[in-house]
Length: 179
Image (cartoon, rainbow, N blue to C red):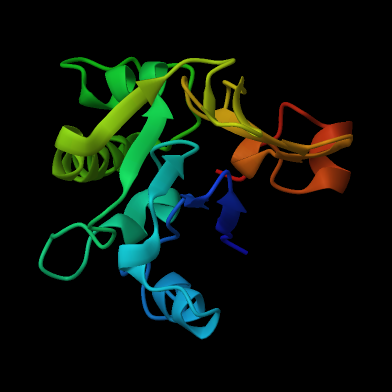
């Protein structure tokens, strides 16, 4: 149930999150094949928005050789998120990442963010990436977790990413977590 979202908006092809890639075994990592089945090749993607820096959302950014999959994309992530994962001493006390996975999560976050650093644009809540695509602050799952408000005329969609893992459980128990 790890999902990505491809938007054809404002003349741009923008991918929201990149899936897990090869980080979590063979049952995930199908995003590239599914893009291709939809008639979209990685070189056509002009923007990639990372809702947060967890492996199941950034793992598809790099190929097996550690090279960016989307050669023509500009990358966007919350400034708070980038600062947290690339900082020298991140405070994990408010995150529900098991202690034994914190170093692994931090190392992966640093590696993947470093690989796109030259093309990464840190964004703040309220920033419009393109007309009709606005960054919404949604901290909690991670310090700089963002949602995206997609709008066209009177219609709108809020892509909440991991703000809610299961609507029935988490609306009733917002303190619960998938971890």
